Image (cartoon, rainbow, N blue to C red; front, side, top):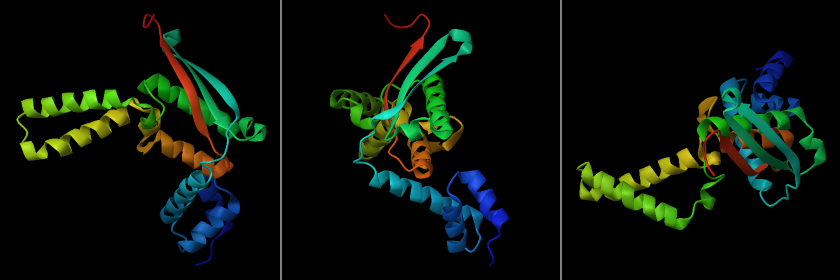
Length: 199
């Protein structure tokens, strides 16, 4: 099947991937756009894995104010070069992450930051809760594991469902941009303020 320039352009607009990458993905899938999108997303994740060891020391700080000044977020998003830090796609990603933090109120960036004692305490609560609900003894470990996973998805920014597309996590969103921009991208730190909360 001939891959038209129009099909390549449509795929590029939907994914933001390079023209040649889009063309190759369409050729590989005999013009099946959904399969091509899947290939491009997987490529973005593979690129993310390859860049894991790279240093991300450039970037930008993004501020976001929500609810008429009631919630404020400041996030530092890092990349490898100043060139990417000034790219509009990178700036847009920083804005999206700041909005995610405002809306979903994560506590940690990644599950690796959650202290072991917090997880142990949560496991005890989840186990007791399952017992109180009358769940069978043999199912308790599985139920607790499922609820711990849900805890990560609620409290860890990278594991949270993305507010604009809940089938995608924030980690997926970052990996997608990493595939397009070709650099390691990482959330360094964030702070979220709400009027009347905290010290």
